[in-house]
Image (tube, rainbow, N blue to C red; front, top):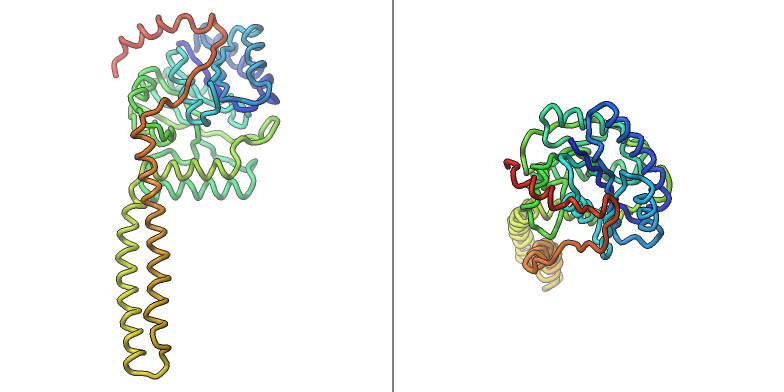
Length: 330
């Protein structure tokens, strides 16, 4: 089978040469064992990098038969870069993996074996995150638990390291939402799937392209794109506030009617205003988040544009692959 490894890149000039070296050794080994075709490839997706990443990709595509490159017109974010690669490249199976070499690439051979055993999706699951900082490790685990509590169907400790068969890729093509969260969408596709466990390594070079701000944005995206529990919580909070407000009203009236300790007009005015005002702002913020998503989705804007492609005759066999895809049963 033809295997394509999709690697999203954003300012990865420090690791891309070493990543290519390791991916090339892996592909040669798999080809030698007869598990994949010689037409297999590595597809780098340049997500609007500001350094020499694209120049390195072009150079590697000229010197390495496996390397192809896709350049997006501007930075569109990690999830859109991954999707652009999957929707553009050819291959009977596609593996997505980050360029930083933190995910164990040797697991790819096990993924290919599972594909040959009939699996359409193979998830890479981290069992050891000791290389992460304490803060990142704890917040990540809290994040997965939070999504589970909100009813989001996703794989625990799985990021975007996975194998997908061609028919699952074509099924994914039917999802058109702009607010993209692949970790939640792909489990919805179905088909036969399994998990491969591995230990997360330290980053080979450079710095993480996922600071806390981006992690928080992705977490909010995951919750608001796949769960209405926050909206349901507003109803519950409203009920609690009603009960609490009734209790406060009873207490204020009892103090005012049966004691001489009440400051005229203060308790009955200030406490409800502060209490209800805070709850109302919280609820409006949650509802505003969902309304914002509706606003963005209603525009149906393109998720990305491809500026350039290099390698393997610039994917000239795309039409042939598209013709093959029409015969795939979904």
